[in-house]
Length: 270
Length: 94
Image (tube, each protein chain N blue to C red):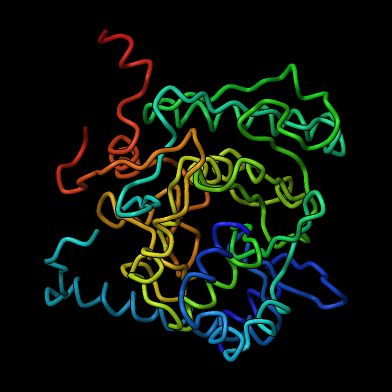
């Protein structure tokens, strides 16, 4: 077994689920010891392949992909891309009583403000935080389009959201307690989850992504731009992706195909 | 019956294939979260109902083809504030 296994075993965070120690890889992937060995082995082989390709490039006999591969992936239904109807205000409330402290609640409120603002500057969507409803008990949306709350998920996810096609009673954004300790950019995690809210699927499920990245069904998807390993919708897997989960130029291009330019920009033109 | 239960029911023989392929044992191994009394399966950061999780399994094992899934899904209604639009991704930015 290579050195990476030992390094990961020492460095990765661990959680205990049903009495079993699990390693948390790539933010939201849980691995037992056997899986960690395989994971490390695959990563080492990929790193070796990348190093060999780089060396070949440096010696002038590298290869280049000539075909255009296809970035942001949208959900589809009956061949059409699914989106919120124009004019829909994506209102939300953050259930204050679900958080363990005022600081945690405030962090999520502030980070959601930053993340929703990033999407509003990217394409024609309008989020609205109904802070006046945050103090209501329970997880009912209370008239908002979706509701955000802390939910213990055993560390198996940092956060989890929903798609536009999900029924209205499933419009929940869950924040796991690990959100507050993750090494990923916390605003970035919410940018990613809000990307799902807008109907965008994971970037790493495309054929161009490293094989070690998790697969998902592709039957209800449409690619919107070229594969983007730095996409906000890409997990950190197989040595690609990013910890800050920024909205890239390709993400912007794809999002504008679905939602048009930012509403503030459109208002200025009018 | 949710959208995904309807899809499973509308694809002939799929329920039987799922059972034969060991979907129940696979479901037992998945992580779950319970929200307002409803159990969801955590597939990456996706919270899936049992039927949706079963369709992921069916896709992964090749028990159903993409065309069959699309045809079965086409009849399912979208929420009233959501729409489907035709987008030609070859045309680029709007």
